[in-house]
Length: 223
Ligand code: OGA
Ligand code: MN
Image (cartoon, rainbow, N blue to C red):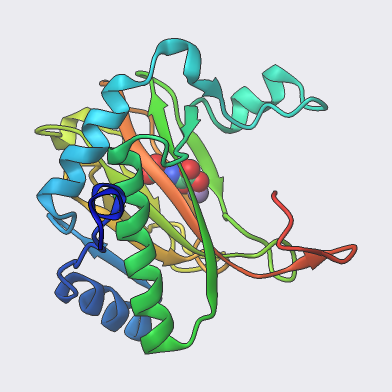
């Protein structure tokens, strides 16, 4: 390598695969995985520094399509989101960690995960996301959901739990506190879930691994 090549050389990150193995084991036995303190510290720090750099103006009300009515959407979800593009080093590090997880899962489970997309979400006090599924059978191509949390010292009294339901008929679910360092992975079509209102501002990252799909001969069209 000459000096110029050396200057632009991006080393491939080597990530600890133990956490990916734990996720794979859980996916095989339960279809979901809750990893408290599962985010490597440098990934949490990268996400936090990214999240803190986002200005108010960059957060957009989620779920407000052109055809949608503000009041209707507000009844379902009240979060504001900002997509992660990887334009910052920290954003790129997060995406490369997720890509490493994608490769690990594909090698272990042959899931054929093809791409990943993710956004920051901010829920102001009182905001929520009603029970929903991230993908409908036979539609779209989100197959695996990932949510990671960035909130210091989150207490039970703060609310804002993610509730993950085992199936359509489950009314009890499993509650997960959105504590910094925790991440959750689950099969997108299988688990209805919701975000309960919180008394504090709640920061999370939601992401989806997709399989390849085509619509009108467009390979892997954006959603
Ligand atoms: C979502 C979602 C859960 C969370 O954005 O689809 O379900 O805990 N998020 O933030
Ligand atoms: Mn969801």
